[in-house]
Image (cartoon, rainbow, N blue to C red; front, side, top):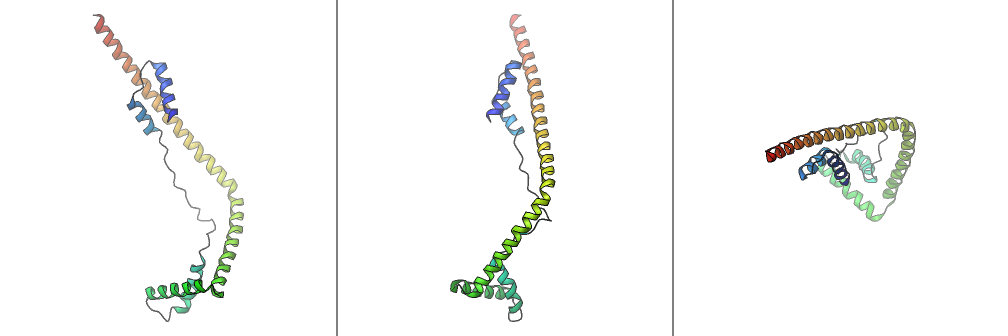
Length: 167
């Protein structure tokens, strides 16, 4: 916030007025940056799930007829997965290997995607950054104008007070 104080100090030295806490607070509120929500690209490759989800998908197909209630089905799948995990069985290792393959595929896909999208992203970011810079500059100019107007009003009031004192 020292940038704001420096800005106000320069303005006060030019206009002959004092910087008040209200002025500082107003400028702080004006210059607050808004957080921009990152937009997900629908065309980007999706990250792989975890080994349990791959296992659960396969097991759901097998156990669907046995368990009609989905809650029971899911609890049974979870119970079986925990058994396999504790034993560090061949099944557990198999699904972790599938996950590793899916991760490698994702890395390749994302590299291809990013190489295609680099040019587009650079152009988008430049546009967003330019818009942010323009908005900041506009806000600064608005504050400068307001401060100058306030300084002029203060100067007029001081002249009136001096005129009354001299009478």
